[in-house]
Image (cartoon, rainbow, N blue to C red; front, side):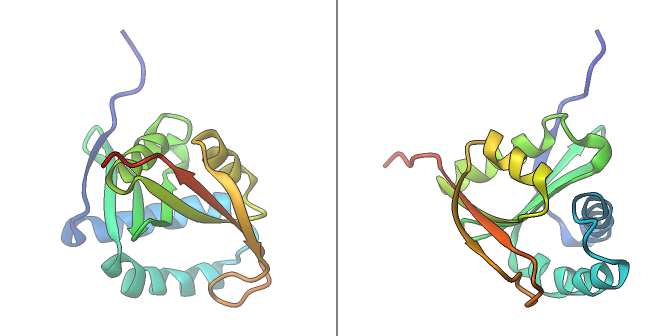
Length: 155
């Protein structure tokens, strides 16, 4: 029987995963953020490598032993969810969101307004719009949509 191999999730290991995750982030960003030029992505990569990845709780998704995606959480904020464009629509992103939600119970994400595919993905996962801001974290005039997902917490 054919089909897509199962996704395996595991904790991030900076020693073996950092370069893979950065390359994956770059490939996914070039597709999802075509409004960011190469110089901007280069500068953002340094911030992600040096600040965000070390501070985040990161889970990676693998298929066939290859890293195909990751989610980076800062508390209940999805600081980043990136899946290799070749693995879009194969369940990796949903698996990462489900794992993150299970650990937190509630998630929040900010998505570039221009990234319609990501907005549709989060909406399909149950996120709802909860706000908007006109500038991104770097002060660029790129509107962000804040979305939240409350999975309910059992106490």
